[in-house]
Image 1: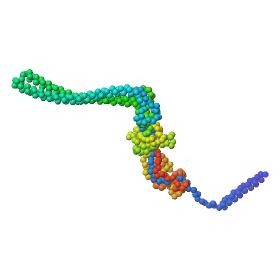
Image 2: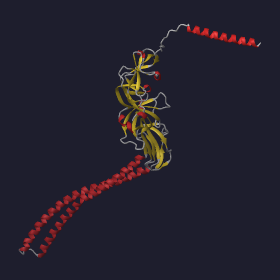
Image 3: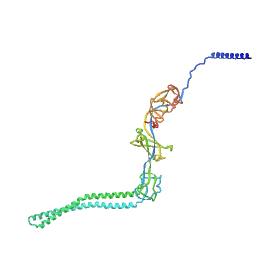
Image 4: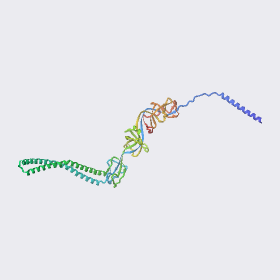
Length: 429
């Protein structure tokens, strides 16, 4: 039994060895396969032709709208409201000089009449000085004539007195008459000399009376409140029959035609904003609506804390059916400077200041220098007009890699001659 097992084992070993030998002979006699190089198909890529273009570089910021003219109307006199038209309500449109409210003016009209009466008396007193001056001029002329005659009589009497042909009493009487005539002339001249000072004093009195009349007339006018301009009543703070005090709020009137937007722009962009630059305004919650305005003025000083500059944009609301109301938070796009004849590429294709350019079925590395970083594009130097940059599969490319363009090259998108881009303010120095 044991001998049978040994024989079986020997047979199995011989069989296995024979199988290995035969297999080796078969493998050795197999013909060698033909060697072939592996040819990879060209990588399909997207491209974009690069052509010179003019870029308007907008500056994007946010601001809040406000009425260009806002007038809080308050009482200038004390009195009772005796007229308040029913049409005068918040939200109603009013025209310039339209009567909004009346306050009882009887007390002020009486004060005006009294002031006008006093002014008339003061003016009459001033005119009386002119009459008095004219009368004094005539009196002086008469008194001078009398003085001349009296002087002649005195000289005659003195000559007779010296010849002892006139008594001492006659001489003294002639001398007294002469002195009296002289004093009369002096008195009239003195009174006339005072007239200019009296006239100036009385003119001051007249001016004071005129000021009193003006104030009284102004109080009467203040009893009627009129709209200072075409606008909309934003707020009404008074009721019919109410007694108002000086300074008490009555209305708030705003001019909704002209809307002003105050925009805080980084001070570093001050050289890129100009007066008269177009600005487009949009409101996030009002889709499909936009308003065009102009930069009207720029603050001459920057905010020291925020390092920003205030830019004021004005919008003519009458141009739009849908009005831009005060208090809106708006996105403002101000047109900045124009970059002329520049070459741009998508920002995401620039890797370590390199881009891939397509030429004759291959991708070639091209060094570029970024002049301007924009939101989605970059202005670069290092490319030539007509160059075709590759915009896809950039991680799989290498210099002189074989590529094939997806679609027809002539159908590739060519940027418009005048292309508008939005500034990435974070990347603008």
